[in-house]
Length: 98
Image (cartoon, rainbow, N blue to C red):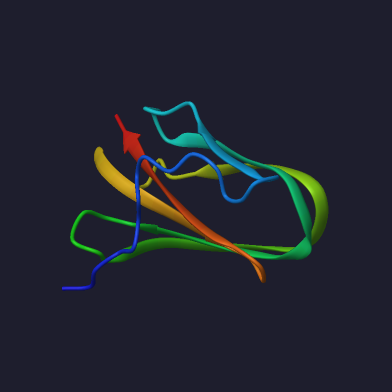
């Protein structure tokens, strides 16, 4: 079993960055917002409760604010964890798929 390093109560990525998932809970289409970050390459992975990666994505270099729609409607209802990482940070949030 893979252990996901994910503090689900952690709200900020760093002192100046913010990572949001909305709506949460949601029906399958989620908007991921990352505010006030450096110019860098982003990767995100979605894991199920047992630590299996069920979705992965990347965004080429971007600056400042990112708002990205992610379709997870192919997944079963349940609790998942989204980990987003860049060159200078990493953060994880719980998301609920209804």
